[in-house]
Every structure is written in C-alpha cells, then in structure tokens.
Image 1 (cartoon, rainbow, N blue to C red):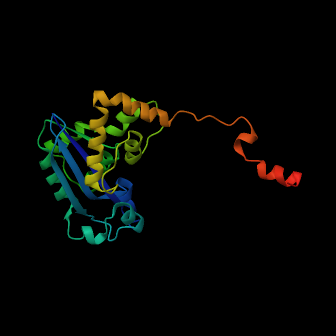
Image 2: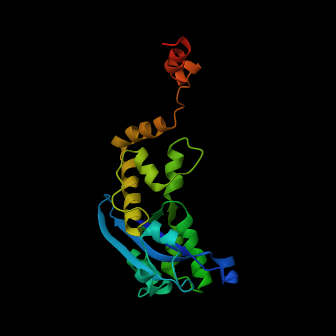
Image 3: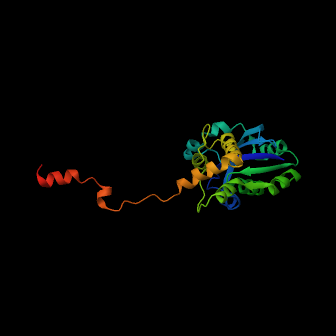
Length: 223
C-alpha cells in the first residue's frame, strides 16, 4: 500500500467574516505532499499554492513563518480546484495518508464545509485512511506532551532539509521521520536518543556547586 505524507500551510480568515470564522478560522494557502511506494521509496510529489477566498493579504507573521506572500498566491487556483487535483493525485484507493498532527485533516474538513464542496468517493476514502503520525510518534516514547516536527527530528538525530513550514519540505520531513522509526535496526538507537533528552538532570547539592565563591573569598580576606 502506498503512503502519502501531506502538509498544509494556512492563513487566518479576516475578522470581517465572523460567521465564516465560526465554521473555519483559516484558509489553506499551500498543499505539499510526497508519496512512497511499499518499499518506502519516494515515487511522486505534489506542491501547489492556493488562492484564499476571504483573505486579501497574508499577515506578516505568516509570511515570515512560511515564506509565502500574497503575491505568491494571487495567481494560484482556488481551494476547490487544488483540493480536487490533490485527491486525483492521491488516487482512488490503496493508500494511507499521514500528517504531523490532526490539524491538516481538521482544516480540510472545515474548509470544505465552509466553501460548500461536496464530498467525493476519493475524499471519503482519504478521510477514512488518514493517520496522525505525531500521535504515533509520541506513543512510541513516554511523553506527556506533543512536539514540533523539527524538534522530533532533532531528537532522533535527523536533519531537517530545507526551510521549515514549507508544505513540500514538511511533508518530506514527516516521511523521513516515519521511515526512520519504522526501521527496526535503527529504532532502538532513536528511542535511546529521545528518552535521553527527557532524563532528569542531576541537581547540585550545595551552593558551592552552583557558584564560584573564589572572588568573594579573596575580597573578604583582602588578598
């Protein structure tokens, strides 16, 4: 079965649309994905920007985070068309789709409802074969909190390639992390690295362990 790793980048719907924001607070501005075959080899990729329907500008903090400016998406296709092309690219069946957290699936469901896009058999299949890889990762290790994709890779000694919060780069990084922790030979090493990050560090038993009092002692003794 093929494995698809996807990442969405979003921007907020302006406050001038309170009713719309009750349904969906964000709009998708990029979809990035990679596809792996049964052996874990990347065989295809998908990357498209999306023109927002409500936003007429992208907030500066989103521009800084994603590198996406409104000029980048001004000439892009609307969400409806890009989503259709993405589901066509995924295929009718025989795949599992993964994202880092369930935010991307929730975004698709809410934005599709807001923009009154009817479900297709392809979309229904995608929804029912979607997995939260962040949850799987955190369940492999005794963590009481979730973490960013970049940090999860760092804990496993993996290098994040390219700019973070780029749809394609994030999707490919998620695939790299998935392959790494599903490699039986490497898993124990990764597990040890991650667990070591959460081991409690020894606490100094005395003030002398924390501070260097030599200068103070010299001043008092007049030496």
